[in-house]
Length: 290
Image 1 (cartoon, rainbow, N blue to C red):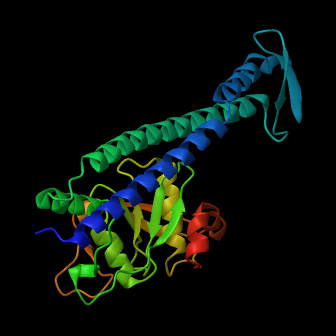
Image 2 (image 1 turned 90 degrees about the horizontal axis):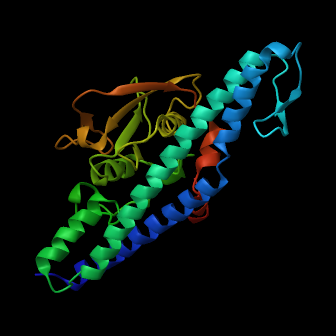
């Protein structure tokens, strides 16, 4: 039998999920609008290589004719040769292009998810117990409905984890305590990425809300993982990278203790308070201070 509480829970959870997806789309759209023109970087690199033999010495900038005959001012690193400056422009071009592609891919995915969520909302029948139960489980897996840790009726649902958005606009959640670490790991989607400080360093469980995070997102999430661990003061911290589906909670294990199966990747990073502050969700800061 479907209870009114379950129906309300599902409707609220679905509305929360739709709101979150819309915010993500808004953020990604703004990011695309503000991305630099990558073709300009490629053009500058090409012009520098083309005219390298005609430029003597080291300069802060040079002016070169583009393909339309217009003079283009190109900023240079005076410590580097013209060819090295050209390679820098090509490097930034390829990096920016990859970032642009990642943002576009995430935006396309978010729009598809929103369409599916709105369709689910429109088709939702509160009088169908099986549909309510199935949707409830789907929303729990998506993190839109929070369940009690280990499904215990005695354990209250913890406050939400710290929330961050990488420069690719991917949500990263960081647990605040052992119970919340359990909750975060046990309710996240199985194909999401999971991180923890390696080398038996105590720290937060970290979940990346993506099943195909970019290398930049992985690096930034690893920095967050290192920062929110006992290795915060270390020069370099190893961070283990897995998927949520690899994690297991041993029966009777204390809060925060999990095991994993299968291969794990290790990323070594430097804890960075500045990056952590930069990536922190501003609404999250106002809602729940560290």
